Image (tube, rainbow, N blue to C red; front, top):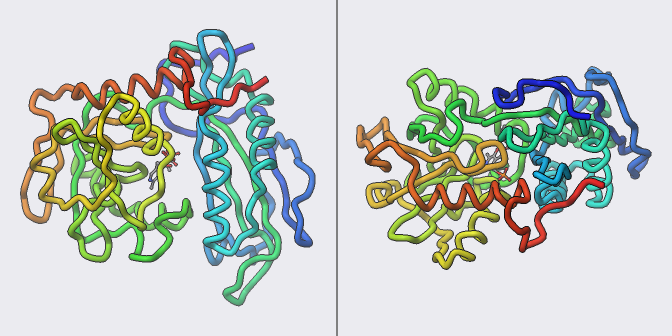
Length: 340
Ligand code: PLP
Ligand code: COI
């Protein structure tokens, strides 16, 4: 039974659901999966997540198709990525099978919160891992807690699939060169808050970060990767200070399937003057078209879309991705896991 909610007007936010699932790592091994109805965690005051930022997370989505079935998009990729993030912060990696079992369990338990087909909404799945044992010296914890919560969500940018403007501000970096940018670490998001709020105050939907070492090349766009279409070629930044986006990886595949050339390479800021379309891509952002990019340091405004309407290639990529997620199109790459 689906919950009666105003599905079409959901925003991207937290909403309580029935259950979350948890698993503890102690004495060198992961324990039993626990199903919880509590929205709280009880933590030691010296837990490493509170002091030294041992926190990593993920974001993936479940979609309800026309056939009523629920499908989860590329969960194996998120399983691999969180294990990588864990290794990066010397935390206990979650075995892929355990990740999978817990994702399927939490979605099944909260089935009534998976938005109906046609609403454009989805169930956002948020796994997170924290260091929970006490440390005062700067050392990794010996015990970890892995939790998965879910929340029904609508579009990340309030405008939905409408172009928004973004900006470049060189006074902010999200991460350091050779820092933690390639992992999904809570601290990266803490470090991005001031820039994000500043951009919002100025009327932009997100910050387009430049590479933190030279400030010459495009990096990523708030909580999303950046892509552009130039002369029919899909271009996206190559950088080791950005999160390897699963949405971007999927869109690159779809672009190739459409016969497009895909280039993952350094993109100098000035090249923005030559692009025909651009988008912020990610689980939450999906593929949000970019209308204009303002470089607030040089004063250059890169007007990407001339008529304020999403461009044809980004629109096609967006529709194909959504089509696969909602099972309106065949899942030729085997990206979806049906929840039985
Ligand atoms: N970059 C950052 C910083 C993000 O937070 C996200 C969101 O997860 C992405 C990129 C997009 O990654 P994905 O497509 O795997 O959601
Ligand atoms: C996602 O796209 O899953 C994100 O994590 C973005 C943001 C809400 C942190």
